[in-house]
Image 1 (cartoon, rainbow, N blue to C red):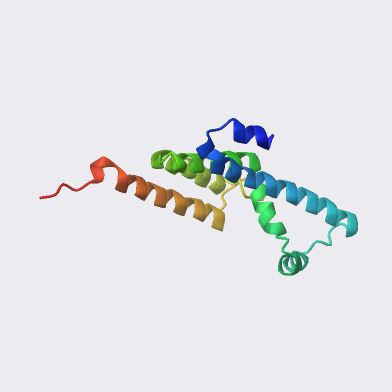
Image 2: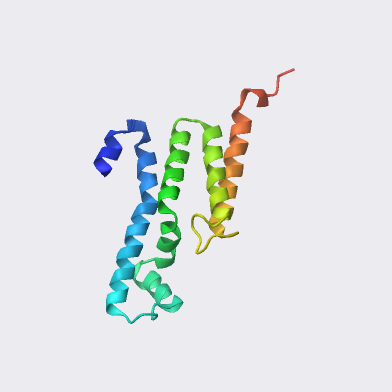
Length: 149
């Protein structure tokens, strides 16, 4: 599947394909780690302290994998589109898709435990990216140029 993804897209968009796969990889890791932990530990024994110890001692970031895994399909599509637009130097398209990601994250459709308003750090990150890309788009548009006297 990944071979086809790289062959079916323009070579310049290889980075967009790779970035789009990150949420899916996090989802796979989360499911594998949850299954493994449930095999060796009793139900309900996965505490925040255990997750912190796994992160500090083993480099296993269950909470991060969990955030990325929620809405992985939509997130992957959005991230891939944003990077593809950036590769094509289409700041308007990248701004639009980052705004969509912000809205979906704000509504809890991606990166959230439940559907509803979610002002998480990820949501604020999407807002910041949207604002930065929008400012870059406005600064690079021809009508933004100031005529020289």
